[in-house]
Image (cartoon, rainbow, N blue to C red; front, side, top):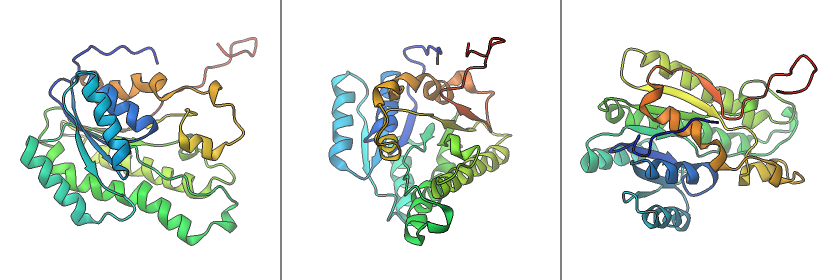
Length: 256
């Protein structure tokens, strides 16, 4: 959380951010651009992507690129066409942040609806697999490639009533570990971030009675997103890292 990245640490990098219109994805896109990257904004709501685009331009950073795509209905061909366009425009891709995700419904496992399960798996798992397959040839061309997945605390340890979402995040961490191992002899590093309780729309959906003012904002947790996308993390791969690690209790039993 205390990591400070140099102002131009992502200079000349091309970075794709999914779910870039809201919350963590929006903030990550703005921060990546602020540190020198050309950011590709992928999301389903054009108006939100345009607002992020405008903010990046207002900040005086490199012009972003908008990629309207609904992961719910996207096919393998959509991702291949997107990768082809990136290849034609930039010649490579230096990083991708898989941020887009669905919560689904919190319910006992026995009451999980098939349609809800399918939707969450489509966006949180299958879409990430197909997108990653499509952009891998591009990101392998980068001298310092980065792939970052988004996990959750319930992707480490299953929790009652979080069945669909938790299962998708266990799958996400598994995908990250498999890919990291497969790319261990390349210049591409693969990791995952657990953002923890953060002031986002998804968090409000899961905990409607919670006082959001007590939560970290997306901006608060950006140091880890910048670190894992930048050159200093070249020796870190195959890890799922908590953006808000719990403090260890002291001898007195209080957190320190």
